[in-house]
Length: 345
Length: 264
Image (cartoon, rainbow over the protein chains, first blue to last red):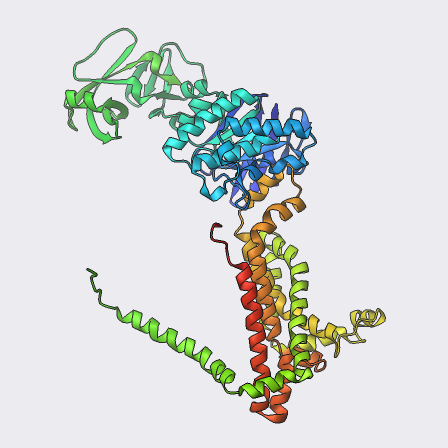
């Protein structure tokens, strides 16, 4: 278990404010946030390589706040691999073994298993400079796991990789986590990665945690406008609430149930807004008439902005659907939103 | 078929300026090297005083470089890795010996090495003498060579990503172990270049040495003495030998420090 209590780090021009986190043993926890949110700083504080201003860090009930990095038993894998360029693959992987007090035979077996598992045996005596990005990241993983850390910190391990290697390493990470049973704490700015890998997540913005919870929960029920937008909710509006109605500007949206008192926003995913030429009706569906304001080509789909009164909704249409519907900008359309798809926070 | 591009006027300007610079440096040196006859050179080398002074120059400079390596390496590492209050000030102090006129360096060192200064007094008591000794020469050469060593090695340390050290520590290595196993092996080329720079600066020092130790005579002092006493012809062969010895030494160091083909 990793427990972070009121962690504060003040650097020139940036501050990490009162971070509280609790990560269970063996969990795959992710720290998610945009660039500059302070994610790497939290990792480096846990690893002990940046000085902290205040707070406590405990790993497996041991207070490690004042311990030097070499006595923390925490592995770290950086996005740029940080391999030792003057050492071979095997020398990189076995670098930390001389500092371990474990049985050398057991360590050797463990390293052999890791090398085998990560497909590094044929590369054992290669120089680091000859490896591909994916291979380098596998070496970095093997090196960090070789010393059997109690926690493995992963600093955006996929972001420097080409798309094909990214998928490969993503799979490797997921399998490895299951097999080794070590707590993984990964930093990422890509929600898709987190959906695939993480069990629980904390969303960080400007040095503060905005929301912590199960990945699926954060995805479906964001707690702040920032999180809502970060997890891909394109329609986030401030709202007032009356019984089971949310009032957004001049529109009234019917909700599934009356919201709790302190709610201030509604959020709707773009994929939950259905665009049609004809008016649809049904129970629990909010239907509005609007005008197509803008069409944005997003590659495999189009984003459609529809103005309804003073409110602009963003929906998505596949290329095929858009082609069939023949929707030029300025055309009148109907949009339908299920009341169950309206998230209130 | 190659397409001939017109050569831009600016290229001609760079070409002409480069030629002037190279000629300005090489012409006097070539003239000096070719002027003495082979016989003169041979005779000069037979002179034990000449051999002694060249050897003294080489080994005092080597000692200065060794001292710079020993005390300058940890210092360069500190400057490269840590931010602290007054760091800029400390960096400026390091550059001072480059800017101070050379005789002033000699006078400054004598100032603290004399019996009137508590440090000089202490040194005399333990038998360390600076005036007119090899110790004095090495002290002066270290003073002038150290900034070149520290600045070169500092840049070398800065070029090594701090993340490599972070990873090493996370794997169980102490700071010392990390320095010895990661930082030093990656920085050794910069360290060697720093040693060469320091040596080169030390071996060319004259103004400060002549104040602290006219005798024993290092090669530049001997060249100066022979020039003032007997003229150009008598001083040139010694200068040629000093240049040749330096060239050989620095070439050897450069060859050892060249990157291997398979290393990036």
